[in-house]
Structure formats: C-alpha cells, structure tokens
Length: 222
Length: 248
Image 1 (cartoon, chains in turn yellow, orange):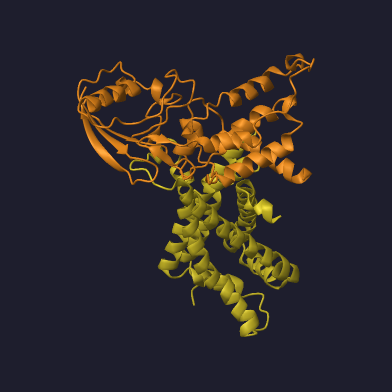
Image 2 (cartoon, rainbow over the protein chains, first blue to last red; image 1 turned 120 degrees about the vertical axis):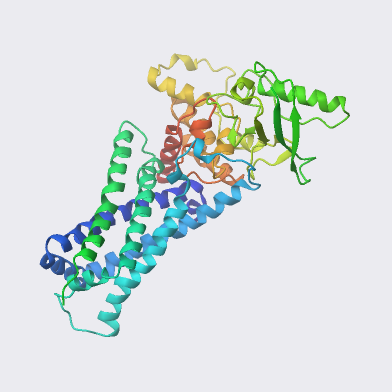
C-alpha cells in the first residue's frame, strides 16, 4: 500500500477520487442551501437532522473532513514534486500557448478555496461545535434558518463567499473532467463529461453565490 | 532577415549557464531553424569562438534528436513539427528569439542546448519490449488479425520519437505522455498482453525514479508533441496501472 502511494499514478488517483467525492458533497450541500431560499421550515428540519443524526455527525462528517484534508495535502505534495521536477526554470515559458489558465493554476484556485474553507468552518462548523458541545445548549430545531441568514448580513462576508465561489468554479472547470482522465476514462463519453463539467462548474457555484447574495439582500427584520 | 538571438550557453554539466545575446544578419526565410544556427556557428568559428552545441541528426522530423525551447515553446511556435522542420519564414525580420534547452531535473544539461535524455532510455528498458524468442519461432506476428481501429491506435502510439517535447512543455516536467505511448503500443496488441502487468508497473516506477513530475492533465504535452500523441494514451496507461494494482 505504501508502495502504491509512492507512485505518481497512485497519488493522482487519490487526488481524483477525493476530488470526485467532494464534488458529490457539493451537490448535497447546494441542494440543502437552496432549501433556505425556498422553504425555511424544511431548511431547519434538514439542518437539524444533519446536526443531530449520529450517522451524519460521527461517520459522514469525519469522512468528509478526511476527504478535504487528503485532497489538499496531496495537492501540496504533488505541487512540490512538480516544481522540483523542473529544476532550472525557463527564461521564457509560454504556458498559455498550449494549456488553459485554469488547468495551470489549480494550486491557486485551490488555495483560495482552502482559505475560504477556513472562514466557512469558523462561521458554521466551529459555531455548531461550540453551541452543542462547549456551551451544551439544548437542541433547538428552529434556529438554523435565522443563524444562516444573519451570517450574510455583513457585506464583507457575502463578498468573500462570492469570490470564493468564483474560484471554486474555476477549480471545478478543470478538476471535475480531469479526474475522469486520471481514472482512465477517455473514450466516446469524454466530450459529454467535459460538457457536463462546464455546466456543473458554473451552475453549482452560481447557486451558492445566489444563496449568499439572496440572504444578504433579504435580512431578517428584528 | 536580421535576428536578435538570446541563447543559453553552458560550458558543461557542472557549470552555471547564462543567456548570451547574438545578433545575426543575412538569415533567409527558406532556411530551417537549425540551418540558421549553423550559419551562426560558422560565424562564431571564424571568429575563433566556441560554437553553440545543439542536438540534431536526421533533420527530417523523424529521429527526435533535435530539442529546443524556442520563445517559450517546445520545438518553436508551429505545431506537429520538430525544430528541424521549423523554417525561418515562421519569424519576422527584427524578431528577438529566445533559445533554451529542455528544462527538467531528469534531463540535465550536458552542454549549451544539449540535454541528457537517457532517462527515456531507462524507462523504455524497464518494460518497453516484449520477450519473444525470434530464433526458431515459427509463428508470424502478422498472422494474428488485429482490428484496423486498434492497429491504428497502437501505431499512432508507436510513432512517438522520444524527443522529450512533452516533458519540456509540461509545467510539471511530467513524462507521462512519453511513458503512456510506450505502454500503449504494447497494451493494445495481443503480443503485449503477456507482460502487461509488470510492464506498466516497471515503466511507471522508473519514470518516478528519474524525477519527472506528476500529470495534472493540462494537455500541453499533446499540443506540443510533434507526432500528435494523444492524451488517450495517458488514460490508457492509468487504466493499465489500476488493473495491474488490482491483479497484484
């Protein structure tokens, strides 16, 4: 197994599989978030279920966090190796002549998304952990909608979220289809996978951004 | 044509190199890029200076020996050609042209524009062959029918001339297009099946040992490859490798 992880191809597969797993998670996340716009009651219900179901809390959540950590740690390892593999750099290098900007700058789009995750964890996850386990507050199935909308009252947070979603879009634009190539899928379905990737990379971050902006523009009046 | 050349000069593998400016007059647009360098070298020799060392052999785009990074692109601005097939008509009078060797830790500079590409030989030696005793073997390989489509794919992979442009162009200095072409040309044919598992594992292991980077699927290699080797080969190598890992 350790021999497998030493291999460049195995590291790529780890990157691709963890990436695809996170893509699946994004679908779930955006679906639940959309509920906060459509039906606050359903959003509260679903959030309460996610927050207190032991399977979600103690099995799925650790798997998700592990997925995030594996993806970015492996990304850093690969980036360091790739930089070392060049050795002496070129005086002139026209990367734009043969590859897209997004494909060449995955580390930067990824770093922005990672930095955003720091804020996002602070905003919601740390808050939840403190609410439930530190302050040991009683379960309140009606608080989630209000807490979420209040988060988007300050314009700065809304803007940071929107910028992060733009970078997430760029990251997905290359990464989603790329993971299929890494898994060995390059056949008659590849054009369809690439088209779907582009739609997904626009629609999902756009939906996230819409939700943030919607709550910013529709604050809860006290 | 008058050109302003900026060329990497490096005395030997252990020396520190640098870019040196060379103005060059009287370049004709029908000259190949290598002939242009020949003209410059004749001038340098007549002045008693050390000529610029660069790799070349067939000058017909077949051997894969020539290897120059020209204005930031492997084999220069045109696509699907090697440097020897690049002509000065692709440039304009007064152009500044930056000429550098392939850059990769696995391709150390030997002198000036010449790099050591024996890392490719070692990858090939790790598994790019089939073990068939031809002596006294009565079975003709051509007697096994192969679908035209499959034969074409194997042939296309086999057209790789091992020039190293894929490594030079890749932002990660990855050799996956080269290695995958060499894996694919066997993986597609029945003769290659016997050693398929060990082949892909050994060739990938050697590729990693040489210090090449990891593929991030930017596709730069495919664009700069003079033979148009497709990214499909990298996907095939990934499949072969995953299959080998499952079998092992």
